[in-house]
Image (cartoon, rainbow, N blue to C red):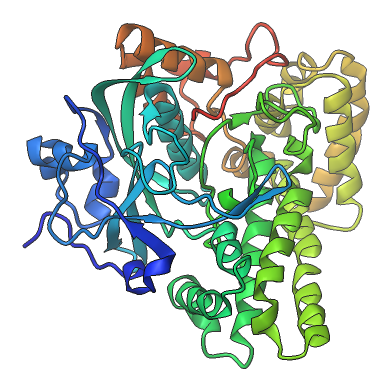
Length: 491
């Protein structure tokens, strides 16, 4: 029996889909953290993975039996500008396994050395971005949001050169697949309709099998991706997540959150919030994310036109009809989610005004996004708890006026206040990856080789909806309010 039960399918596609490339070995690999539960669900022995042979594999120093390592080809629009050849410049896909849920998963090493797509880069990853992606992706999974997962992080014993010399690391990442909108764009830009069709058939079989046998499978494929992205971006907004770099090569056709580069979470609510240092014009700001998702999906639809119908006009009509579903799908998921965050199980006409008015007052009063909704859970159960919410508003009377309408709406539901509060606590996290705590964790690891803060924060974020009094400091807002926080892509 092999250590990892690989069952690889992407490498069965034509050679032009990827470049075969083994990981580049590192000097002195050392395991930082390994996700034992995820390993077991992938059919991998956690003890083996944490042992010497497993760490050698996770670092890229050995290729396990059954693996078929590749770097995938793809293109992408980066900040609106099309780049016809990107590809995995510092990631190597070892292969695929079948998860216990019966679904196929990729195992990829990020920071595994240069590939033919590296574009003069070193193919490596610094420790800080690896820890950020590990922590945030696992936090997103615990929040119930579709995401790639972190299997392990390994220190390489080598330095990488960025602005300074930094300790290097490799992230072992797990995904439903690493196929992106940009993967389709890579072949469409070359006029390779045969490759677009082969890729679409692969995605249908892997991610949308129910659509494979319908009369118009490629239209069903586009419908499926549109629906998943509408739900995904709504889920991001409902927890205050800002992806930071929603290029088309960072949008998974499987509907997962992928590529945690300059990501961050809102402190004070402001839909114009942009954290990424390279997003000078706010293209990927928090409130822009639904529109950008639709823009990216439009690029995907363009690649599929030759498959949607033989007649160009009919193909365009089919694409437009599919894209038109994004808005209603997003609005239903987003406003329905906001209603549940306010203790309203059934979304009704007029609820949008209630939720939108709250957000407008939160923005005007610099109220913390996560704490406002979490403290509303207590307020739903005990009006005396209004004080905790009021404290978050510059002008507390703005909250008072809104709360009268909210309580009238809650009364119409006729639900027990304790039951309402319990339901609200299940959708309003107490803990998110607060940016200042993430930075403190990274600084401890990079500057002092102290991984204690990483371990503790990871444990807290694994239970985001539970009150954890011993770790209450992780729910606190930064003294600065977080308005001046900036993130960097890590490359």
